Image 1: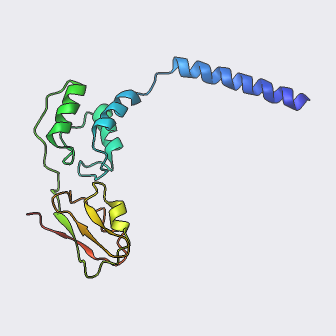
Image 2: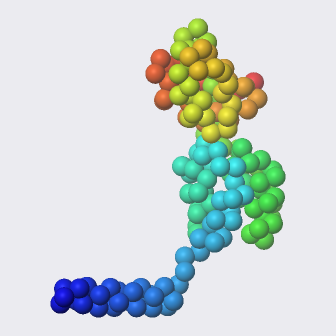
Length: 161
């Protein structure tokens, strides 16, 4: 019985301490980060120089990163971010290294596994399981995320036209 009472008292003390801490410590500015993140296209393509949309949103809010670094989001996303943050809508910036081009699948070597399609953040890959997949060139952002998961190395990058 002593053990139950001791654990109950410890739980009560911990609850009071956590309650006090949540009220007195400053809240993280995740509300604004969440709003910025919702405006981004969620392609996770890393063309902005950050590993995904959430880290880019955090950099915009916390570190003052430029709001015009998202090629998949385009001018529309830049305008929405500018409106939300009260900043000037700048023209869309070119990616630092520039896109490597577009992905191309050697359809004769494709085994139809679908790993590339699962990895594509913008759904630019179409096809049928166990048959063949193709890349929609106009939708490909050149992020290269489809190359690594391909077990037969049938995906390569081609200069953008």
